Structure formats: structure tokens, C-alpha cells
Image 1 (spheres, rainbow, N blue to C red):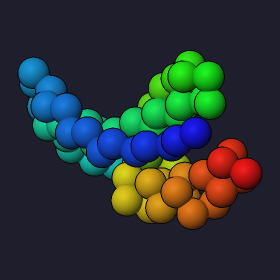
Image 2: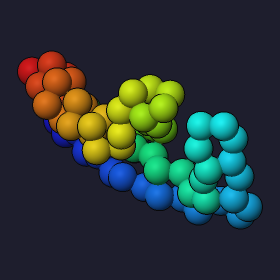
Image 3: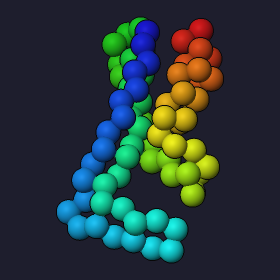
Length: 73
């Protein structure tokens, strides 16, 4: 019945860093899918350019443009 995405920035209590990046927050993509019978499921992605090769915005676009049409058919 529906697919929704939410971009969420979660601050860390302490900043940390490593050879590839330094972080003080986590940028996550949350996906909510609701079926016709009202049952809903949630998923989370934590895209990182240096790990997954995509940003949160790119991951959201992929979900909405590539995956949502297949699921909502």
C-alpha cells in the first residue's frame, strides 16, 4: 500500500575517527513499507561513500526510483 523513506541524523555521544573518516553523527536512511492489510515493516541503511559507494540521498533515490515501483506493483 505504501513505502516511505526518512533520513535521520543521529548524533554520537563522542566523536571518533579512523583512516577513512571522522564522525560526530550517523546519517541513516529508514524505510517503512505498509502492506494492504496494514502490517508494516521497517528497514535501515547506513550508506557511506567510502564503504558502500553511495550517500544517503543516493540510497534514498535508489529505493524510491528502482525498488519502490517493483514492490508497489
